[in-house]
Length: 335
Ligand code: SAM
Ligand code: SF4
View 1: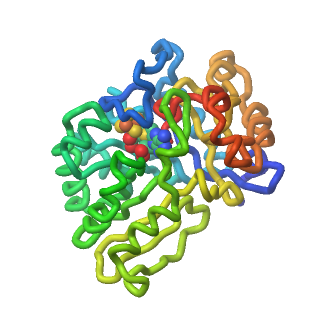
View 2 (view 1 turned 180 degrees about the horizontal axis):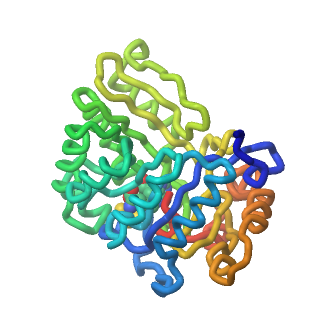
């Protein structure tokens, strides 16, 4: 029987089949581009979704056509009931994946395999231990680096996310590409995006064009192969001829991909965000706890989705600090 998709279709005809669920607002790293220096005001534990509530809401989205769920955070692996959440969600007919900093992923390999997680996105912003420490405020480079190799050895499909920041880690673009020579991973260079408290400014942005220019200083045009992007892909994909892995650029700032967006986001305290950049949220958890139907709230939220970046349809608007503070910090959205 064909699944009902109408409540997840917006006014521009975009159908939302991909739900990203943030499991937790806390993290074991302190990435400066993600988390404000002073930390974030955490929701009281009782305001966070329990694993049963996560399952109930996820089930409803799947009933209406969601076919892919990504678990994120903060850091999803530090949630104590992570294996239970995974087990519950694995009973749904979906592709289940995870975005993690991989600091403690070695302890979860068996669960991930058991519950059908085949691909993961891992954040790693530097291949230099000191630089890693400066960015994340924690000395965990060795663990993450080893764990990426472990994931590859265990045959997970791994995408490494690197947020490129001028004067911070942009000089490492080629080192990350060299990683793909022997490792069958995809390195994704992400344009630094503005969120509440992350001290974003235009000068720290390394654009898609600048990233590709760096690549071209080392590799000739014939060596850089443009790959076919998957449907709804947020990244522009490439490969260096002869390398086992590939690389990509996610250009949300200079080249947004909103036309084909199929994503919705559920925060750890049960709010639906119709866009990464949206200032408004819809409270599903309170309605669920009060025994009220949540489909109508979901439908309204989807219908209210802006055409481009939560209404920030120009670079000027995106670069306006007042608008950044109307959104959450990335740590409580989850990417
Ligand atoms: N802790 C997990 C991790 O780091 O992968 C999951 C949560 S993290 C918020 C999800 C993704 O958001 C990471 O890949 C991170 O690099 C990305 N991210 C965080 N802040 C960002 C920003 N300001 N611009 C671009 N990407 C950002
Ligand atoms: Fe934590 Fe991920 Fe944010 Fe870094 S990017 S602080 S690992 S949630």
